[in-house]
Image 1 (cartoon, helix red, strand yellow):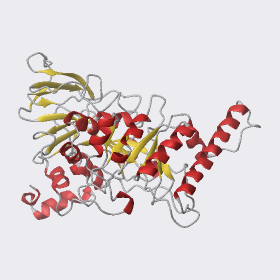
Image 2 (tube, one colour):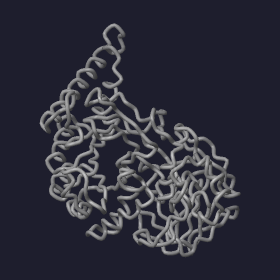
Image 3 (cartoon, one colour):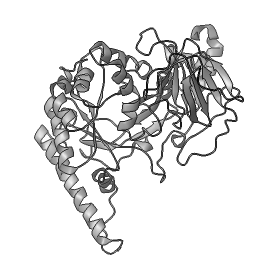
Length: 441
């Protein structure tokens, strides 16, 4: 993976939990940009200061002091937005469950993500700083997802996020509809799909109760079952269920299962959300939608509509966005908000959906999703308005470290494409030297 070199005044910092001391010696102040905090009104001419991987100041230029020891960056005419949160991605050539069973809760995508994949740099080039990496949707349950910060690092441990107890942050991936309906041992109908999920969750309840009753007595404990342990975390609300679902009846089935077993739910895709926006809102369930500008593919998505975001917003439901990369390109993630606004969603809620709403769906809103003092210094510098088709991502920063710079010849290649953009970056130096830097400008 490309190990980008930060500015002279900034050295790389890796943020896990608990957060280690950062080598960043001086604050960095971005002066003159239009700031879009998400939590609070936009600031036309702002000061934005980061230090040791955190946001330490944000406000109007006339009222916000720049620290005397800060390295100043003049970003007049630019826009600074929180780092984008992609709640459903498959970057890193991720793999999950196999064909041996329709529900495999013991599978962990942790064991299959390639963080040196060019897909990671392309996501950085799109302004994405946090992702929920998921296995595929050909199963009723295809594995445990993983929340990653898109830092520069050569191993998965450099990108993972952990809670205060050291536990990896992530959810679990479930699905219904046509994807998981196939030859045995998979279900052949929608009703059987739901029945199999219920059966597995009942087993998890029984496993949980046996462990509780044993009260630590090893003679009474059931044989350890890693899949059941993961589903107990679902039942206890420690692990969110990210549910791939498209058709209106499948959406309601996912909500029904959530109510029956009390698990926390994020609806993913919801192609026909506009048909059942009221029930989704009434259930208090958030939806992460995808904006497909060239509809097609599976039959159950034939009635997907750009007005999904507007319909959910009008109903009072929380809305986020995702790429499902490679279904849509991570480099073009911001256009999802533009397409949603074009179809009637408010600008405020569309930008919130790209950032803070997604962070809330991943239980990460205390750290990312808005420009707020104390939060992680994850942000994007844009050339213009976030909703304009003419706007470019100029820089992407994670934990106060610049991980994408459009002025860097290697980074620009990932942003605009061309020969070598899909290859492991270890070859870029040689290709650029052989072809001439002019080709990458």
